[in-house]
Structure formats: structure tokens, C-alpha cells
Image 1 (tube, rainbow, N blue to C red):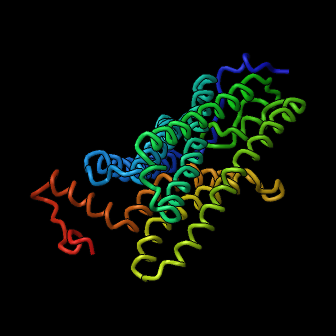
Image 2: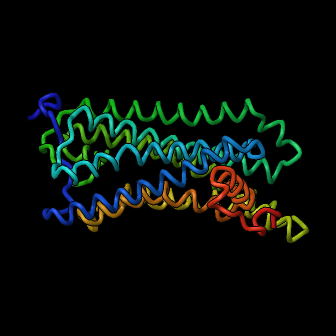
Image 3: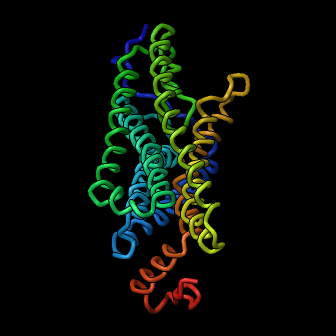
Length: 321
């Protein structure tokens, strides 16, 4: 039996053996990473600089962009460096840090999406009480609870995972230190201990999922009772982006965790991991910016102020239409 302390490094999955494909992988991931940095960084800068966007919805959106940036910054640079330098190794401590930070950002994002569902519920179903229930102090406490909940959940998972002995070598069939792949290297008896922790986690995340579903059931019932078509359109325009982000996040993550072993393969695991780790951070800024006229106007305003001679704001974007 190989003790965990005897393992000094893990070997990540190599995308290709030829140098040309390794460089292709590097440039592909670099393009995705830069797109995520640009999209989320633009949202963070816009929300922080435009005082018109200092509302609970955009405060939570700023936190979501920070979590997206954090999660993808944990995995892509190391994978790009491995391809560039033609290596597969990641140190034991580096792998533990990658697992801790990635799980932290992902779990905190899920808790934050739950808080954002509550924010939309109060805004649509209890508009007269919105200022009281979603004051600045309440919003800070909710966001802090999401970050703290992700931290506590991650400490529990990481401490339990890296305290177990590994008997199945040190090779991971993934381009980053994915928690399920590391658990597969453990011995059979401790694997059951980790499985019980995963069951407990399932109940926690299921509770958040039920809360989100019930919130949107109430939201849609309230929206359908709005007499004016313009009012219904405005309500849907603020809710549909969040619902799309939640659906994308849950579908990719649940498929990764619950896919049957009969269809599991290294290629499929690689695709699924890419879907839930890279697609949401890259797509979230597009979902919110394309459906939110107020955010689009603020982004154009910021760009015209930063690049007045090179960027011209269309007239149709400044009149709020």
C-alpha cells in the first residue's frame, strides 16, 4: 500500500504526443482563457465603475464573475504550461491546492447562484419589500455566506481526500486534478468513506436545487400575472439570463458526477470536464450582456470613455431601447 505522503507528484492526462498538437492545445486554451478574462473582467470593471449598477443584482453578478475567473485561472494556466513544456507532472502540493481552489470556486458559485435566485424571487414576487429584504448589508451577508459555505465545503472535501492512502498509482485521466479522478486512486475501503461524503454533498446541493426550482416556479407565476406585455418582457429579461446560467452549470456538473460507468471513457470524461469547467465562465458574460440592455449600455459607456477615438457607441444602445 502506497501512502499518500510517499507520492510527490501526479501525472495529468496528455492531450497529444506530437509537438504540433501540443502547441495547438496551448493556443486553444490560451484563446479560451483570454476570452474569459476579457468577458468577466469587463463585467467586473463595468459594475464597479458605474454607480447606476450598484444594485443587488449586479453586485451578485460581480461576485459571479470573480468566481468564474478564479475557477478557470486555477486549471487552464497549468494545463497550458504542461503542453508548452511537454510535461505531465504536477506536484502533490500543487495538486492539493488545485483541488482545494477549484472546488472552492465551483461550490461557492453554486451557492451564489442560489442566492441570486432568491434575489430575483424577491424582486419579482415581493417588489414592495425589495429594498428592505435586499439592502446593502443583507446582500453583503448573503454573498459572504456563499463564499464561506464554499470554503467550509471545500475544507471538508479536500481534507478527507488527501488524508487517504493511494493504492492505484499517481496517473490521472484528466487535464487537471479533478476530485473524482483522485478518489479513484484511493484504496477500496477509504473509497467508501469518500462516497459517503459525496452522498452528504448531494443532499446539500439538492437542497439548493430545490430552492432554485421553487423560486422560479413562484417567479413565473408572478410574471404571468403581470397585465402589460412590456412588464412581462422586462421581468423575463432579468430572470432568463440567471436561469440559463443555472441550467448550464447544473447540466454539465450533474452529468459529470452521475454519468453511468458503462458510458465512461477518457475522451468523454475529458469533454465533460471541459464543459463544466470552461464553458460556464466563458458563456456567462455573453448570457448576461446579450439579455441585459442596462448592462450593455454601461459597457458601451465604459468603452467610449476608455477608447473615445476608436470605439463609437451606437445611438440605438444609448437611448435604452
